Length: 579
Ligand code: GTP
Ligand code: MG
Image (tube, rainbow, N blue to C red; front, side, top):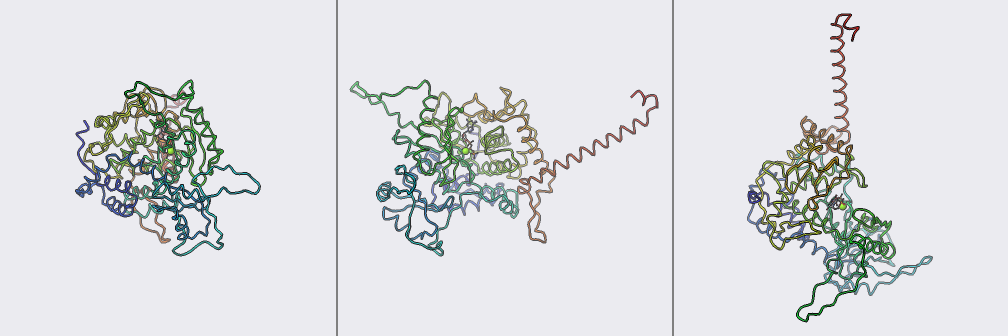
């Protein structure tokens, strides 16, 4: 079936892939990418060049290759807290005594920090040999030698200025007002959606820092499980991460299991191990111990909470030097597969990412989603809704998950806990249908689609790419793509669903009325009025729609009352009395 998808838009896919695979060509690729985005989707398909073929085949091992590369970078990196008056040149010269520095950047959270990536891991050993454990005056220190360091300087003086001053990379998204202003300056709704994505998406540096935090935690877990890896999943790696999103991690013990080595001799050795009543029990015990170690040993990790009785047991904490909210789980390979699936969809057509970023921001701005757990729709569910919507287009803009499974090769086969998680990893095998819908059209029709979707009867199924009868009574049913008996949106209650549907209707109405979507020129005060996506994000817009609807309802009621009284007055006095 997937063979019916014919080539389209690999130009975006290729440029984006290059950008991710080769951070060093980021600037160059970014320029090219922005240019391509601005060409518009309907016409850009004609601009496909020969180079796209290369880019598509580069994407073959993309997800695992990118994860491995970032993991390796993180293992060669250190995080250093620097005084504000640090001279960048002197600092880099001092650190590079331990080896060649391949990459570095600075950022500011609770102080200024430098992420320094060496070319070789040996440099880290050399650097650590030169570090001392601080002697504290009124407290005692836990002598755990992590890769989170503090630079002390005897130099006094103010913040550096000029070429040796530290320039800090921004880890946070633009403020709401700043973003609205930026959006209002764009020329089209399509450009607004691209601008919003570019302003909010995770940067290369932010992702590197996330992998470094995982790697720092691994140093602790490795005391018990030397071969373990702590892997980020969710929005850090699925290409839908927004600046400020949480850091989801899981402790991967697969490499710890070892291999069968009974070749020839007929003899083999195995480890004696403790046994637990169930997989879940073992996971809880391991997380409990690792959580304790993170709390006691890991500098910068604060507010450690062990939430071991959750469906998916986890340890939650804040990593202060990065300001990341962290969730550490174990044995969560299915969630990693969901992340890979979203990454693949995001790589197939860049419009998915633009839509998802815009809709996630819209939902957050109107309180449809929330960073606290509860009956709200989650970002993951929203993303699934967008994927499903794009599978429904004519021609379909995205393939179904079953189509991705059918294209898989033997090495793609993957079964986790009895669930078939097989998907094609060689993206060049996927061909897409030629759909030239603009982002504006897609956004409008997304709102219309879900404003009238029959959530009462139907379930969203991205595996088959069609709606199905709801198997259970939850308000909203989105079938989990890999654990197909589960509902991704089971937490959503009917009032939250109703709020989502109403907001979709209101936003569709704004599109239909057309007024808000016209770019307006600056007023005499030089302030550009909010229009398009900027207007959709404003709470006042939906409030004014609500108010208008209320006014209309009241007007209709008054008209009905007037008609009733006229009819009443036409009746004979006897009839009126009976009534
Ligand atoms: P943010 O809100 O930006 O953090 O998005 P996120 O995609 O990281 O979502 P979240 O932190 O809530 O969850 C992390 C990952 O866990 C998701 O990307 C999914 O892969 C997975 N996940 C979340 N919720 C569910 C669920 O209900 N079912 C399943 N199977 N996986 C889930
Ligand atoms: Mg997350």
